[in-house]
Length: 377
Image (cartoon, one colour):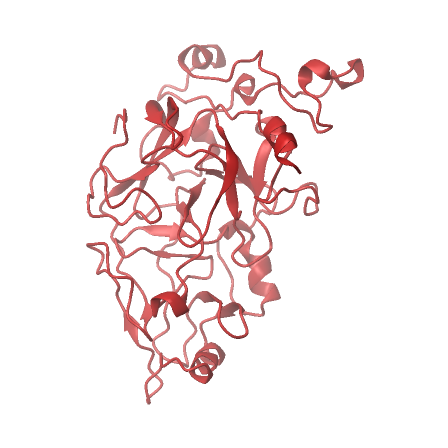
């Protein structure tokens, strides 16, 4: 897909309806929320705008999603959000002043088991998983075979008695130092604080996609867990920050986050022969989260198969149950399985903590940061 075509199809914008605590009627909700201009042209699957559609296309709903009266809070898993979503003033990385949805979540969400296992104690135990990027790369369970592979490649994670060297990179109270060489890293959990996420109410397409590389901020899952790009390489950082079987772990600051799309990871685990099971319900087609640019992220399949028209960021324009015909991303069956780039602008201070200024918010604007600009908290 060339840049002109991509820019055209990305003219479809995401606008959701904020749910008030009273959950009023749809007419009342429409009066109190921000939505996309219904007159704006939108793109059909054939690439034509709605104003160009023929009479035979009138049965296809390609209106902007703001007209569908989708309730933001209802999209999230029960218990994922610690406050009702709100619309706040925000500034995008491009300098555009606009509005964003503000979501608040706990550092350890109630909707997900954040207890691991991560690092095993000995070579006879089985811990979580790791995507190894050295010799013989791939997805592995942290078991005896994996540690033997590491020893053969010159790493010394295991002592003479078969014990794994396990190090807490942050102790749950600070940013941490990135780990210790030849250690399996397992941070202490801290559920005492909150994170706030800003998602643009209307995406703004960038001239060029932004790469989502190591520990880049990717988005927010509907279970309330923040999503980051690849975990740090052992070769680059020395330590191995173990993931649980669903692809998440504890940040050195104490909060839990994803490095995988957990809802389709079981396919990856099975194909890699790990013998592990992710207890998160698997759904390979559902809406699973939102990118920081405002576009939805769905499972790897659509209508029973992997789409064949995805762009370089694993996205395309296609029909969705929630928003109709609109641009959105898909997870993949690679390991890790996240989109490799984003096409839209994120908000400045897209991820902050209102009550933990020491939180290490990876890939963002630095530690802490307090409430986002214009945020209500």
